Image (spheres, rainbow, N blue to C red):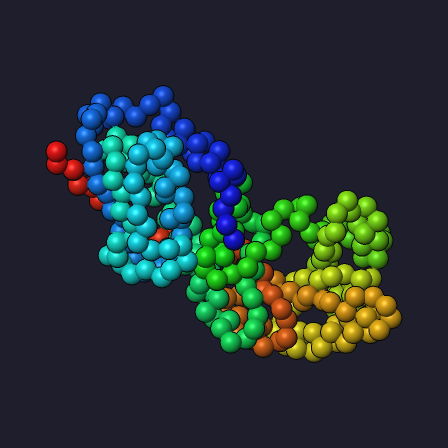
Length: 291
């Protein structure tokens, strides 16, 4: 996953403007002076956000030089130097807090994601994020999940159609809801149905869902249900429909990841790395550049 400059630069401008306001009142004390700065990790984790540093500081001063020592997605240890900057001291100070805050937030998400992905190692099950993201930060937070080894679920409501409890209650049921989406979607779109019971899961497969999100099923229940749903998908293909079916579990407690990984599902979706992660503490240390 890449971060398109056309999407990121306006966000960086807004975030810098939020911090700078009418202007950094400390800038006159640094006028005409150059400085060097280095980032250090203050804890172990997975680094994320380095890709934002150069474009952010160059909005303040195009001459700022940034040298990344660690790539996004790489593990870091406490005390490790992460990157080096050099340029006008006023620009380095002005961008310090915004850049660090973004990287600490994203590194925390990447670190939390990596820990959960490690629990699933060897199972073949992927860890996916959700739409529980911070407004304005979704693209970056989903990027951080990728850096931690997870995969992205839909980016927004236009990316895939997920029919949940309210959709099904208000549309007349699973079959009518899927039919309405298929008939009206202006571009090819996956249809995902959230199922809370075995009957709903089977109805979703029969109605042609591309994926079924199995919400708060126990591992024991999935061990018997998943093969049945796979068999139904195979029968669907024989009958002329698609045999492709993605099975996803949600409502999974972290300590149960291994148990769910053994049930034959494809994905486990969770908001935990984004909604419950702690920031990875980073610091920036300066030194003057002598004339």
